[in-house]
Image (cartoon, rainbow, N blue to C red; front, side, top):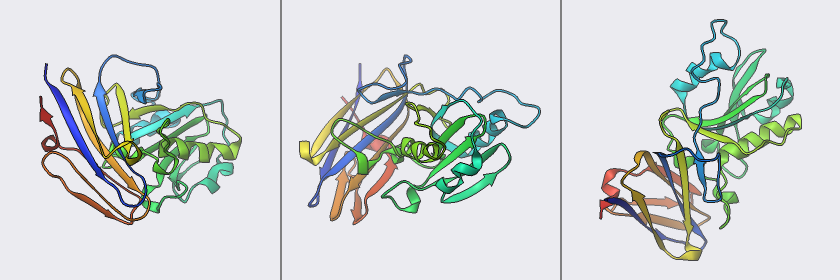
Length: 251
């Protein structure tokens, strides 16, 4: 059996640099989240449900199919006071009597990292990045620890729901671009544990996306892998992208 190997080298500045590889893949369903940072991908219940009246979360599903990429969501008992959550949004894109959509700032990040959030008065909270954004963009470097891989999507959900006194449960993830993907795996390493690591990808899986995120605090950092893809960030906290086949090799 062939195994795809991704070998990443990290060149650090004066402080910690870390790397995330995010894989959307098909396999046997798993629990929503695990200690190994493998998340089950499951569509919100309103996706694929017809709604002739054009109201409710179902009416929003077709919009998400065209705009959203990776997402995280939860639902709770409504009604939700939409006026109370308005201050959480940096920009409000759409507002009605039943739902609100806008961009939410993530603490300690520039506006380019804002998360889109949809809230319906019935109790749905859904955070997402756009279809063109790599999955690796969800990784929250500012709150990364060696034992936890947090995401900006869950941070945005917490920011919004806190305004109505709700502590969100563990979010469920779903990628609107890849409805057949069943798992999301997050893998991280930093220069405190060495300057390189190797990821073995079983050849029996179908991979919909392999993306990366590189983060640093101050200084310059670089990353390269097979095919000598070069990335240089100058005094930027993080950059993201999608790994292509030239960054992989067969063994």
